[in-house]
Length: 248
Image 1 (cartoon, rainbow, N blue to C red):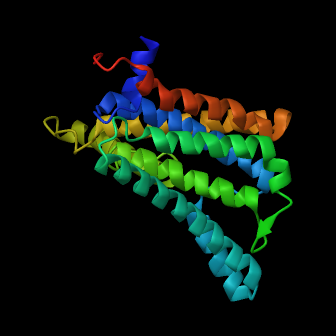
Image 2: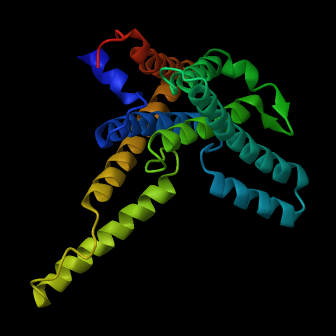
């Protein structure tokens, strides 16, 4: 049963349930990497809105190197997303049995690199940005693009701003309906998407829970705290390949 369940999470045949469960897992991982990574490099590496705003501020203030560094981190995030897209399309074109496995294995491998050599990577930099920061931005782009492709853009695990926005919209519609129902008893649910409300709530909670664990893990263990996350991703990636071909 565990193998069958894990296989379904990354199977090309998607359901709302597998999208949700994979989204929860990846949102928790994103939270752990983002929060733990901040303790490592002093940057929230999934926050591209803030990164672009930081670049604009630095340009206006004449701080050219920090501005270029922020743009470089944004490009690293975009490069991670581009890598995911290329790998998935390559797997589809070559009719690979499980098209998401290579991306998950790449993310796991990079997390292992971060966990085992992060201290050394911090001593090297590109445009004043430590290689650990570049690696984390790349990882965030890689993962966010993966769940976006898997769920047909229904789920994003690093973009909490969008999740909270959608959550607020659905809560607003729900509160309006509850108020309007007193005057118009036959009023419909004002277009409230209950499933989306639940999805956004669960993903935000998963990200926060992962962030708590990631911050605590890095505080007490340092870079090596990402190794269990990498091993979990490897398990998730290889589970479909361990399932017998005839088993559905």
